[in-house]
Amino acid sequence: MTETTEAPVVAQTAETKTPSPTNETAVVTPSENGHAEGGDAKTAVAGEEQTNGGATPDEKAKAEEKKEDPPKEMRAVVLTGFGGFKNVKILKKPEPSPQAGEVLIRVKACGLNFQDLMVRLGAIDSPPKTPTILGFECAGEIEAVGEEVEGFKVGDRVVALPEFRAWSELVAVPTKYVYHIPDEMTFQDAAAIVMNYLVAYILIFDLVSLREGKSILLHSVGGGVGQAIVQLARTVPNVTIFGVCSKSKHEALEATGLIDHLIDRTDYVNEVRKITTEGVDIVMDCLCGEECNRGYGLLKPMGKYILYGSSNVVTGETKSFFSVARSWWQVDKVSPIKLFDENKSLGGFNLRHLLYQQDGSEYVRSTVDKIFGLWKDGKVRPVVDSAWALEDVAEAMQKMHDRKNIGKLVLDPSMEPKPKPATPAKSKSKKQASEDKGGKKDKEDDKKSAENGGGDEKKEGGEAADEAKTNGEEGGEAAHVNGDGGAAEQKEEPAAAAAAATNGDATESEKKESS
Image (cartoon, rainbow, N blue to C red; front, side, top):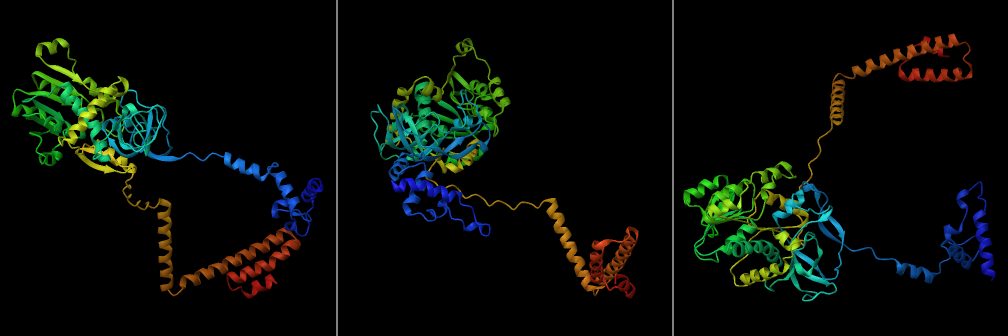
């Protein structure tokens, strides 16, 4: 009882103690050394508990336990706004956790597709709200499993096709978009094969039903989907492939020996007509725009034209409404009657719509199984153009934008980014340049002065003496006008004389006047 009644009194006395007027810093308070002057350790503890709200050590320990750990973070490729490459950034985001029916995947490799460039521009239907994590394709290991998940467990090697969010270190994906990969398949190959070969397989075998002896005109033959179509078409005997791409890719593609006729895209219609006047049986178009009309014009009777992309809308770093509008205005309207008269067929394929909007997940899963079967048999092998760190995603996007890749571009979260070039020194401002020029001029003047034997200094000394004399006369006139200057003026006169002596050799008359 004695401790509890005396503690407040001591604390109050310490708090109200008046500092010494001679030494203010000598005052000792409980907050400075943990105990009041004249008090004991128990009193200090009581004062501290009163300051901390009366919490006991046990209560403090419980409070520390209740504090939640900060959320774990991961690296992700985030689109902060639609437009140029500057809106694609590597940011820290909270790690996701799997919900019911989802698995959490530790991402080892990501696939880059032309659709990702269109998302960056906002040039697709129903674009996501920004900021959002980019990416439709990734491969890795399952790290956690949500409730109501069957057929998957922690440690499984999988590839997934989520609608966005794939380009991150961790991603939670519904199991209907997740597929087991063969044990022998690398994560890079898995990220390079699924989407590209899925599109190619559906085009070749389900939409056009490719058969022996047919001919195909294929745009962007050097891209990931183009290479997949070529390999799958080669599983059918006696198929003729006309591959259209930029001239810079011809040498590398000729080395594969899989393409019968490589044609430059600038004038491919006339080039095809030189080889075959009849035309082709199948046109695979991923460009859209004016190429739709040209492709349709190259079809033989009973021919099939398939549109599966619209990359012509990507003409610059940012979205161009003119390019989008022109791409669609250039397409002729074809009526069913015209198709009836000409014995031709038109078709289209959009994997994103099929998978996420039209509930084609089971059909897609069965197709992925067939593709992995072809891979195991050695009939298809994904072509990987290059692998990039997440931090270099903008450079990878630029390469695809410029149509310089041959095969698939892959992102690898474990890769180190390329070293950035040193920032060049900033040019000097006009003010700095002027100051440097002035300083150089002063140095030159000093040099000339030294060469002239100090004549300039002597001249300046004489001018200073004259100035001092003039100042002295002006001071005298001021004193005469004002009368008795008083004590202030008398104190200033010796100082003026001293200044005059410093600024030059005063004459005898000046000395007498000053005295």
